Structures are given as C-alpha cells and as structure tokens.
Amino acid sequence: MIFIKERTKPIYLLKLEAALRRVPDTHPNKQKILKEYLKQQSGYRGEKTVDYYLSLLPKEQTILLPNLRLKNNNNFHFQMDTLVLTPRFFLIIESKNSAGELIYDTETNELVRRKGTEIEIFSDPVLQVERQKLQLIELLQSFNIPPAPLLTLAVLTNSSVTLKMKSDQMKVPGNLIRAEALPNKLTEIHYSNKKEYIAYQDLKRLGRILIKRDQPYNPNVLEKFNVKKEELICGIHCPSCFNFNMRKSRQGHWKCETCSLISKEAFRFSINDYLLLVNNVIKNSEFRRFLNIKARRSAVRLLSNYKKTGNKKATTYHLTYYKS
Ligand SMILES: [Zn+2]
Image (cartoon, rainbow, N blue to C red; front, top):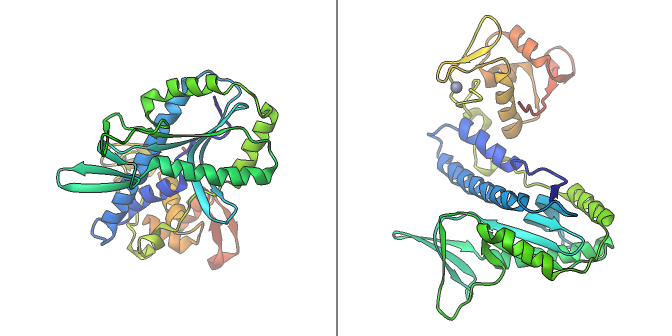
C-alpha cells in the first residue's frame, strides 16, 4: 500500500487546536469549541487506526488516498475518510471511532450509544459510506476512467466499542467490521476480485486527479464559534506544554517557565495561531499586540523572516505556516 499523499492533521483540526489555546476559558463558546475539537480529534485518531491496519498489508499496486473532500456532480461536497485504489477494485473506508456500547438499528439507520442516562445518536456509517459510493461513481464516470468494482467498508476503530443489534432479527451488515478484522477482510476482498479493470498507470493518474480536486473543510473558526479576534489570548505560547509562560532571554531565545523548554522559534508557533485563526497578513503593530512584544525594533527583527509588501507604517508581512 502506498500513500500518494500523506495523511496529515486536517486544517480544521489545527484551527480548533489553535482556538483551544487562544480562546479564554471564560468565553461563552469555549465549551462548544472543546466539544467540536474532541469530536474531530477522535475521528482523526480513528482514521490513523485504519492507516495502521492498511500498512500491514503487502505493498502491491495499491494507492491510498486519505481524507478526500470532493465536489459531487451537483456541486455539493462529500468526504471520504480513506479511499483505496487497486487495479481490481476501489474501496471507500468510513471509520467511526466511538467508544462504549453501540446499538445498531438497521430500520431507522441509527447507531445509538447509551452512557448511563445519556443517549447519543450517530448517523449510520454503512448508509454514510454507501452515499459516498454513489457520489464517487457519478464523479468517476465524468473522468472517463474505466470503472473497477467500487466496494465500501464501515470500520469501528475504537478497541473498547461493543456493537449490538436492536433486535435479534437484524443482522450486522457484511461491510460493517471492527478495525482488527480489516486485514482479513481486505485479503478476502483481494481474492474474490481477481479481474483487473484498470492499469496501474491510469490508477496513479486517477489518484492525482482526485488529489487536485480535494477541497479540505476550512472554515473561519472565529466566525463559526462567534469569537472576536480581540477576545483571543495574546502572547507567545510554549510549543511543548502550550502554557503562556515564556520569558525572552537576552540571547534572543524564549524559555518556558513551566516546562523549561528553550526555543528560538517559539514566536513562529504563535504566528501559526494567528495564521490559522485571524489572517495570513499582519502589520507590525498587530504583530506586537498579538505576541505581547513591546519593542518595535525586535518585532521588525522577528518579522524579517517573512515576505513584506508596502512601506513604512503600511508595511504588511505575509505569514507562512511554520513546521518544526
Ligand atoms: Zn512549556
């Protein structure tokens, strides 16, 4: 199995992490942000679990595409957690990382979780992945690529999940499995689909077309959760323990008073937060406000890392995302 694109943390999840750091606990919508973050984080973990089981398989002519969000033929987006392309078949995998006791009702298409008196209802992952299949078939037809059989799997990725059917008459669908069963299931699929429908070259071409069309969900998180940029916590956070407890040394680095981390690049992680939450350009005064830097001159020095346009007071710096 090869990834022609690595699974990386989705931009939406990065934005939620930045919001968790920067939105004060006293903000009325902080809990909503936290809830959404936990949901997205859990989904991402589930997808990584699927990746792990897929990595155990032999590396044959197989392409893995993580987290594709594509426009369907009706101009609506649909998202697939994992798409596997092989000359013999295509496979969409939807992962659900919920823990606890799930009760599956194939009549109402609901997955219900009871925790004490609390009831939580999830959408049916089998129905979800079948909907993705219909939309992908339509899309592939418009690419003029010979179709291979398109299969679907819904995978329960949390090891502490139990699944029960609502009534004894209901059967667990054959394409709803636990993550540990994934290698066996894939071997079974591999041996029952022997005919090759598409050349590996065409498969790679298809993979590239799909990646080009990928439009990750990327909302303005401050707007979404009704937070004003002035409400965000200012200052430089520690890139390791995330506390706002950094002290600048004379040697030009920051030291975290909480975990003792020493970093020359600490400010860049705070700039990432600004980039994720507010804007991709910044002026000197706003830079000093957001990072709590008093001296204009040291701000100029730090900003010299970024491309600038304009002159004097109107100088605008173009921020880039920093990866350590
Ligand atoms: Zn620290």
